[in-house]
Length: 309
Length: 309
Image (cartoon, one colour):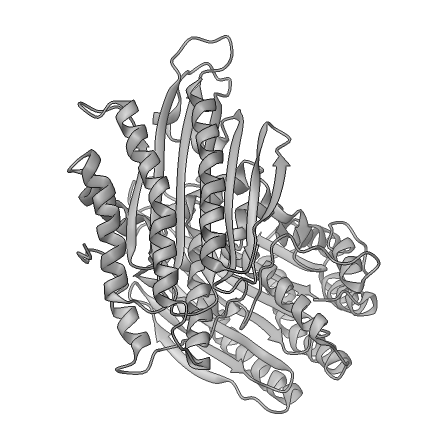
């Protein structure tokens, strides 16, 4: 079955990403924690802590199934059958968040997921399925060269598969990774896509190939960004700023992130869902960067529509 | 008008609470920041930082008005008119959160609010109005004597007005101040009530008297808890635990708190709404208190239905 094939491929991806990150960190090793979900399925959470470069991060694999939660069903388009009985779903994916020690190294997030929804067992109707994913970069200090490298790498992956993908998914990321109540983007964006299905020349199989390449691009991109920045000097002032930016990261994840919401609403494993939260974060009342500072420059670049590539 | 009377009374309460907290802290002074809301109304945010006892805290007054936001109108009972035009609302309240330095001093939260909803201007229908409020205590380490003192104080206030209020509002607080995804209460609870209207012998005026007394009880209760605990010794281990508990506090406020949601959805002043977030917080992957530790004992007491009074 496709779902098992993809779940197995994702497990392999998790493993290769962890190896690459361990090598680039040079000190810390990932823990490995398999878990089961009462309602069906489970996952393997892998966490790295107190490394040379990585202060805290997780690479989660999960494959869960069960009745479609009410908050998803309320969106009409999601219902396959209309029998009143709950539809069933299957979701598998890999989710990554890395919080580096050095404020000059950016936070990164990646998620790729495969989702199936089926009519209640014994009922008529068609199974629907789609692909989703995203990578976005959250520098504590925006480095324009790094942002350019990041977006060019993603554009290269996208362009190989369809010319419309990078512009479309880059704009989607700008809109999705947006902290509305702060009127600022989470970072320099990246790509985001959801409910990717067969469409014209792009068969489901072709989209799977694209989706896999997004996943495979992660390790090379982030280890390069680690290498470039891990030895840059920083002061207490920059460490403080990092804690404030991490606070914003926590705000996004707890208020807006759909993956977090999905996890909390479907009784996922809390420690796996919330591994994305920073090891240490700070909220200072009405903090405003000094005029002309690097912090102020970063804020000025946290907006939608910048053409980094 | 009642709304102006109550708003003025709340301003006075804000001022007297700030004075009492400054006196108890003995070092830090509250800043004072008036602000206006584009859509109508405004407030005064008062923040204290880096005190002897209080690390960061805010006492907010606000009085805002405008069109009822969509997320409130979706609850049918809230609509006064059914003309398709938006209803208007007026809301005034005082909100407090205090994060103390010493982990032996509990975090406290208090909010009292008055809410009016009116049919669109020029349309038929009645104005509805109600009172709401709550106080809850979040010790980093649960001290049973303090929890008892806290609940007995609140019970005394409630009992003076109606015998049913303490048991009803205590249970409501257990249910409201609950971190569902952690299956733990935020702290030792307190009281919570919403949409309090005239009901039998309890006229609206009598409920206002109760509501005011809740607000007036805050300063005495918290300054007593500050005094009792501010000089207790603590170690690095206890400071770490405080940061973890503050992380849970941030989770509650960003995921569940209705006041925060209301503020974010009605374009409130972000820095005033999020002053409730801790100055420093930590998330450690899968942290489990040691067997037999004070931290473990605290976790065991973070549940609903404990009769503290």
